Each structure stands twice: as C-alpha cells, then as structure tokens.
Length: 253
Image 1 (cartoon, rainbow, N blue to C red):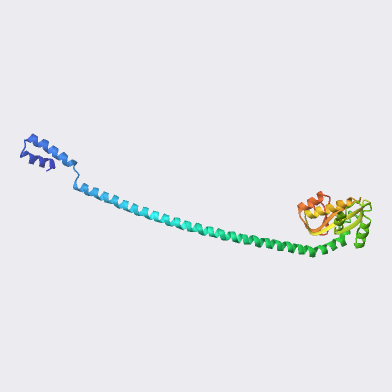
Image 2 (cartoon, rainbow, N blue to C red):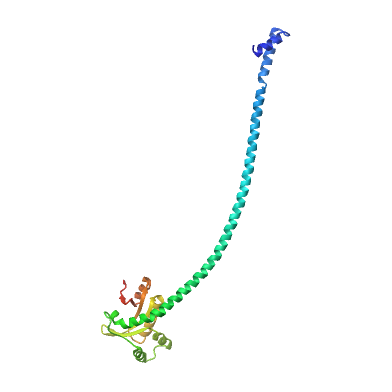
C-alpha cells in the first residue's frame, strides 16, 4: 500500500471520502517536500568533508608560509655570504693588481737588462757588417771608429749652425758611416736597439734632421732584432731604412 492510500484510509475513518482524498493529497505532497533523515545524513557528511578539506587547506597554507619564511631567511643568508665573498674577491683583486704591477716592473727591468746586454753586442755586429747590409745601395760604406767620429765632428759645423744641445744629441747616435749613393757623399746615422719602437723612429729622424742642417745628406737607419709592422710602416713613411736581424727591409719586408 502506498503512503497516499494509507493516509487516505486513515482519514476516511473521520472525514467524508472527498475530504479524505483532498487531505491525503496535501499530506503526501508535504511529506514529499520534507528533507528525509538520509538526506540530512548525507548533508552532514558533505559539510564534514568540506570542513576537513578546509582544515587541510589551512594546514597547507600554514606550511607554505613557514617554508616561504624559511626560504627568505636562507636567501638572505646566501646574499650575505655572496657579499662577503665579493668583498674578499675585491681585496684579492687589489692584491693581484699590485702583484701584476710588480711583475710588470720586473719584466720591464729584465727587458732593460737584456737590452743592456744584447744592445752592445748587436751594435758591434751591425758596425762590423754594415757594409754587407747596405752594400747594394751604398758604395764604399765605411763605419767611423772613435777617431773617425772625432774628425767628422771637428769638421761638421764650421759655421756654427747647430746648437750645443743639437750637437750633443747627434753625438749620441750609435753608428756613423760614410759612403756614396750615385756618386753623392752620404752619411748613414744608425741607431741600434733590441726592439725598435716609435720612439726610436722619432729619435733617429730628429738626429738625421740635425745632421742635414749642416748641408750633409743624411740617411737615418734603425737596426734592430724586432720591429712590429706599424713601426716599420712609420719608419718607411719618414724615410728611414730598417735593418732587422742583419737584413735591410723593403717597405713590404
């Protein structure tokens, strides 16, 4: 028996049949609209699950916040350590710069020492073999010894054209040699160094210009073991001859 018929049967004992039908319908509809006990239980289960999930979410958020704070602390510590490392590295770089400067000075002194040792030896070699180096261009090339230099300077400037400082500068040239080019008398003014640089070019050019003021045809020459391409190009531009390792270089050589 359905709920509607059961309720109607009970109401029929008190009310007329039509009234019992109407009341049974009302009671049945009202009952159908009521929340059942099982519905309430299911609702309570859902609410508990939501609460439990919320609790888990809160715990996770709390752990996330804790982990975030810990990571920030760790990051700050790493940054501090990095700053300390940078400071220590800066001090070491300063020390390295000082050491590098000391090393550079030592190397410079060593190079100067080598020049002092090699220079006189190479200068003697150039003086001995100069005729062989320039013989294709200069006839009767003769290197002046100390007596020859003294005589050369005694007769160089009878009219007093040169200043004393110019004569002093000119005397410091390493080698003087006389000869002829196409029958014309020339004087080769040779400066010798281990490595020729722009300073050597300027110095030799200046001394040759001083010598030319006396009416002498001067040929400026640099003799060296090493010379870079830029310095060699500058020498040829200024009209200097370059002897490197016993060979007279052409502009392309």
